[in-house]
Length: 184
Ligand code: 5GP
Image 1 (tube, protein in one colour):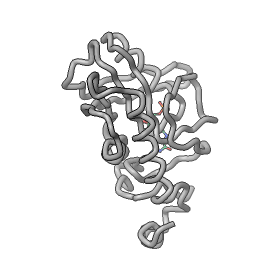
Image 2 (cartoon, protein in one colour; image 1 turned 90 degrees about the vertical axis):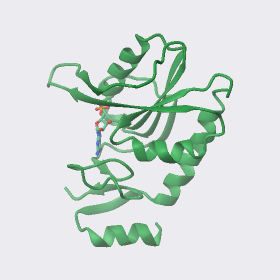
Image 3 (cartoon, protein in one colour; image 1 turned 180 degrees about the vertical axis):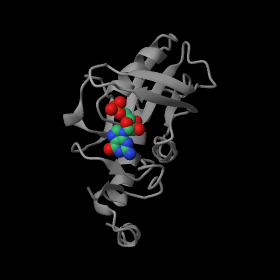
């Protein structure tokens, strides 16, 4: 843990602990940038689709370690998941770019039940892209209700509510430089 991580922790007693410190986080994100870059060529650059708002911090760091040409675009979705439903994703803000005949990389902050990502994949695939891959920073493997393919994962994490590095609790904590767990 860095001095800065500790400062954030000391300042707010509601943060129970650091799950992934900023140094480990940055190291893995840099690796992911290189991993992802190896899948594409600059002659046929991918569109990185970031899901607002949680995914923006990850995207911002990821693209700074990418070595292949790419574009970025944003989408805002909300998912409604009733107890026995499979969930439906509503688009609150759509992409600006057309993804038809383009390589698409969905950049997600976290995959939990997998419902949001499953619907997003269906939705984007219907627009006939050349390919759709998924890069997720965090993967709650034990919380999965819908099996979904993640091509690049940052970290597998336990089924706990996490905050920081873009992820919020009631719009707070997105600025934390680490992934933390709130006090229960
Ligand atoms: P899923 O559809 O996979 O269950 O959940 C996807 C969305 O739920 C994520 O993109 C994220 O917005 C939210 N989410 C799931 N788990 C967490 C968590 O531990 N912390 C926060 N802040 N959001 C979460």
